[in-house]
Amino acid sequence: MTEIIGTIANSPLFNGLSDLQLRDIQEIAIPRRYGKGETIFSEGDAGDGFYIVIEGKIKICKIAADGKEQILHIFGPGEPFGEVPVFSGRPFPATAQTLSKANLLFLPRTAFVELISGNPSLALSMLAVLSKRLRQFTVQIENLSLKEVPARLASYLLYLAREQETPGEVTLEISKGQLASLLGTIPETLSRIFARMSSMQLIEVNNRQIRLINIPGLEELAENG
Image (cartoon, rainbow, N blue to C red; front, top):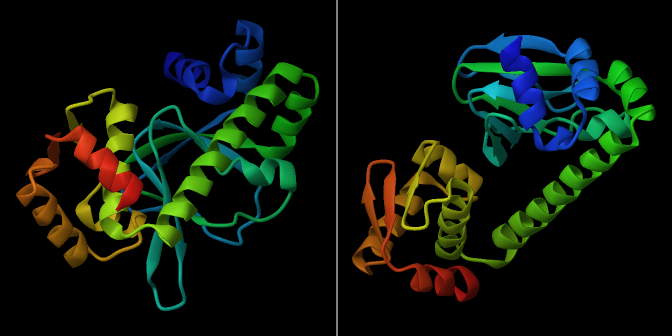
């Protein structure tokens, strides 16, 4: 129970809410557990609620008819996902799958809409998170459509450094195959780019640990290719 209220309190959706408001959310939250590789919802499923990650990693992806996958987002502890249909009343626009064993909180749409109707501060928090997601998605579309893969990779490594608050080194929390899908390329191409960036002394790769040797060089690559 303490873990659940802690997850709710630390989620960006619910920053600044009172203890009473947090308890109201806790009362409608339903814990759910998933194994690695399980589908949480599929594109086209009814958007009957959204989720918050307690533990584990979740990928949001689009899957083509031929099985090709494009990862759109990866979410970890404290992060919400699948929240847009709560407002739109439309089906989920993508598929959510676990990258590891995962503990989640499910917030049913009907109960949450009733709760948010009487909590303007909760509505404002959700708008802030959705605005941030829109900015991130806009940047991702720009990267995929306008930038070559090396620039996309450099941008992603710099993003990780900011998120992990480790300017000189980052840890890849997903496989390189999943990273390739996130960047809109294939693993073989990604491996060649890692090797080239290493030979240029921009980075040093040790399995999933990547040392950022030349941050200004990475910034130049991310910006101008």
